[in-house]
Structure formats: structure tokens, C-alpha cells
Length: 484
Image (cartoon, rainbow, N blue to C red; front, top):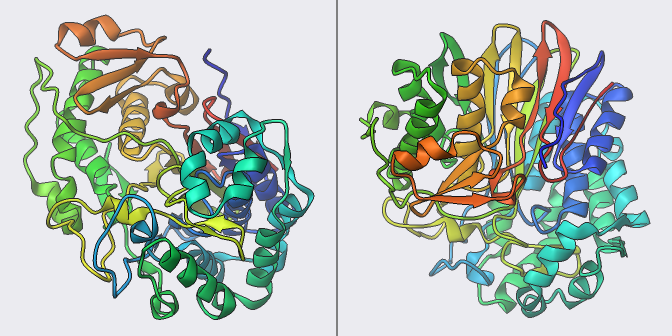
């Protein structure tokens, strides 16, 4: 059943994250004088502890940051396939790319952090050492992926995380987080832990080396900018597929749809048209000039986006105006399921994102990435938005942003509103959606799902409204928001 979404306002800062403990960690940093980046990293680290099915030290982080002066930076913390890799796979060692999250934390903290890193990571260390309740979502994911996890060396996880009432502790992960806080990213990308990562990948049939780990760097640069209602809207540049959202929004900006039913239909069609360009995401802003084939009167039922669920979002803003939109991920549930016992985490399977040329596999190459956080400059200040959901990220954010502009909904109402998701030619749609019949008449192949179905995402939002920090979280999944 649909929940209530409210905007939280603060004086020092505000944050929304994919789990209540992550939100609590971020608020703790903001309340003690930390920046929005400090709060974001603190939340990321807790998510790595309590949501290992969705994210962790073996995965990636993408951030869009608007600083106190209004300058935008895209920080891409995703890694490449090994320089000696000979193939890509969707699971096992050949699916692992260099984990980028730890380096991304260090880069973000160096540029925008205020609190010392040991303070930033302390909440996650405490949760890892003291333990956390597993909960239904993590237990379900663990039971579903039990065979993969056992094959990847995480039998102990299967035993511990399958019980939703269990208290899970992660001593090895706590030790790694302490060493990152004390010694920086080299404790992850060089030395004994790097050797452990290399060995785990090799045992699982992959080819990631110490040299690959040591050579990894984040990609830091300018985001892609479009005009949305005469104001700037920014998305991550390649290899993120966020440009597909920019393409759809730019089309809507130039061809506004005022009716609610027509807006839904056109947005579905825009999703299908944009995802036909997915393999060319590497062209970046040049794709904005491509013509999209959109039938205003009939559903095309394109194959379009693929199914996947996990990832976790964090959005934060502080009293200076520093605003962050971010996502962390290991890609599929538990990523590759390749476990690093010395660190207590699984590695990503991001090499499963390679498809056809020009997004085909090559050694040392980054695949197109599903993580797609955005930032919008509104009439009242910056607004950061992000959601999990793989290819659903583009669709969920398209619906939220378009509903605010063309249907006149508030941010909270737009996040709360029932959603659809286009997937493999079908249109999944929440039971409470009021325009199901009109979409069916236009030829969409509807599949009604329960309200709050995981595939509908879980939006996190934060920003500064007339100089006041604010945050808002979805009622879906375990999202929580808070302000201080």
C-alpha cells in the first residue's frame, strides 16, 4: 500500500538514503559539522555493511556534486576490465571489473570533505562490529542467490544472512573500513587486500591483477547538461547511461505533453527509443542530436530495457549549498558472488554490462554503466535525485521529473505517485496507477504488479530550497530521510 512521502527541512543539512541506518550515519556527520560529502560517504559505507546484496567495497560509486558556488562535477568511480582479461561474463571471476568505490570516496573527500575520514567511516565500523538485523529483503536475496554465493566462497554468508531475524556481524569488513580510514585507498588497491582480491578473482576463473588494481583512478570531469524548463539539468557522462534520460527529457522539453495519459504513453515510447541507443552511450552529449522515433498514438512495444533490481542511492545537501546525488552498486544481486574472505565482501559483476559494439568487451575497457544520478537546478535551488533499479533508473526519474513539470505535482507527490516500468516489450504497472486503462487502449501490454514492487525503484532526493537544506525519500523499499 502506498505510503506517505514528506519533505524534511533542516538547518545544517539533510539526507535520504536506501536504508535507515545509512541515513542515521549521514545525519550524524551533518550534525557534527560534516559536509554533504562526508554524510554521503558515511551513508555509502553503512550501505556496504547492511545491503551487501546491492552494494559494497567490491563495487562502484557514481556521484554528481554541486559545490557551494554552483559548480558541477561528475565523479565516476567505476572500474575497467582487467588488462589481461580475455572474455567477459555475467557472473564468476570473468564478470569482475576493478572496484571503484574506495577510490571514489577518497577523491570526493579530498575535494569536498570537512570531517576526518576516521569520523566519516566510524558509523559503518560500529554497525559492522556490533551487528545489524538481517531483515526480510536481504534474507530473501541471500536465499535466492545461495548456490552462487556458495560457489563463490561465501558459504558463511548464506548461513548467516538467510535468517531475517538474525543479527549479522562483519568483523573482517570492519577491519578493512578501519584501515581505509587510517591509511587511505592504498590499503585497498595495494598490499595484502589487493592480493586477496586478485586471488579470489583467479579462483573464480577471472584475470584481475595487482597492476589493474594499483592503476585504477576515478574519472572526474564535467557532467552532461541540458536545458529543462529553461534551467540546467545535469546527468553523468559516459560510461553511465544517464545520457539516455537526458535524451528523453530534451525531447519532452521541446515537445511538451500536458495530458497525464499522453505524458505516460509518450514517456514509455521515449524510454524504448532512447534505449535503442544504449550501445552508443560512449558518444555522450553527441547522442542528444539523434532523432527519436516516437508514435504519439500507438504503443511500439519495443524490446527496450532489461530487468534488474539492485543498487542503493544517497542524496545529501548541507547549509553551504553543497548538494550530492549518488548511487553505489555491485550490479546484480551480490554482484559476481565472488567472495573475498579477507575483506568480508563480494566483488561486482559489472563486466556483465558489456553488450554489442561499440559497447563490446575489450581488456582494460569500462562497460556502459547503469548508475544514473541526476541534479536539477530548480527555481528554488539545486535538487539531487537518484534511484536504484538498473535500466529502471532512467524510467523512474523520467516519470518523477516530468510529473513535476507537466502535471504540476510537488516533489513529494511525484515520488509518491504510482509508476510503470517498461521491460522486454511489456509495461509493468503498479496496481494503484490510475491511467492503466488508457495505456491499454493505446496498445501497451500491461502487467499489473503490487504497489511498491522492487522494480519501480526507490527515489532519494535532497537539495537546498531557498537556502534551506531539505531531503525526501520514497515510501518504497527501505528508504529513509532526515534533516538536522
